[in-house]
Image (cartoon, rainbow, N blue to C red; front, side, top):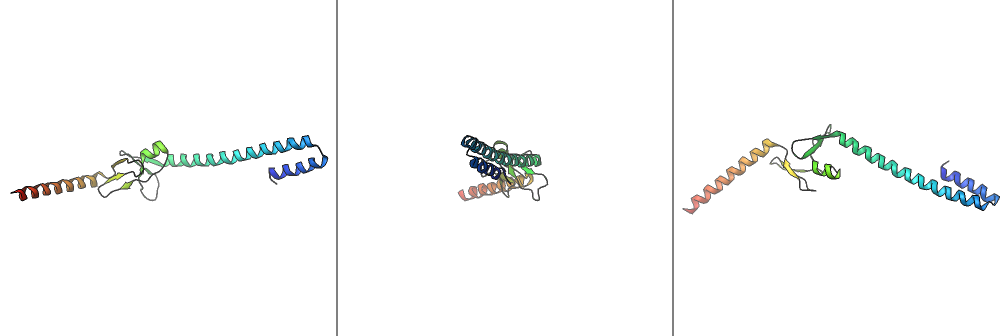
Amino acid sequence: MGLYERIKDVAKQIQKTGNTELYGQLIELGAEALDMQNEIVSLSAENTELKKMKDIENRIERHTEPYITLKDAPSQILYCSHCWDYEEKLIQVKCYDSGSFKCTHCENNGTYDTVKYEEYLQRERAAFRNLSESNRRNRW
């Protein structure tokens, strides 16, 4: 039997005796008990959330670039280190084929794969050189 049911049973017994002062005190006590019960539920939920955050914090693996990953994660998902540090949110970054990434939430960006990024830059430079040479040939 829960606290609320026990208070109701005692209230019925007091009501039978006709002691209205004691009945009023019991009603007040019951209201306080319900408030405390609600507080316990709220604190319990907060405690669960804090434990979850602490677990995530212990699993975070930091990298030289501004992104983080989770240790022992089944896949290497990249998350924004800025969003985690300032908002305690795991926001997945958008990874590009160029080896770079960008957070869609805070616009944080960087490089997750330097080899891919260097290859991308070489391709861009070559394309720019070709375009420049083509423009020079077309002028004459």
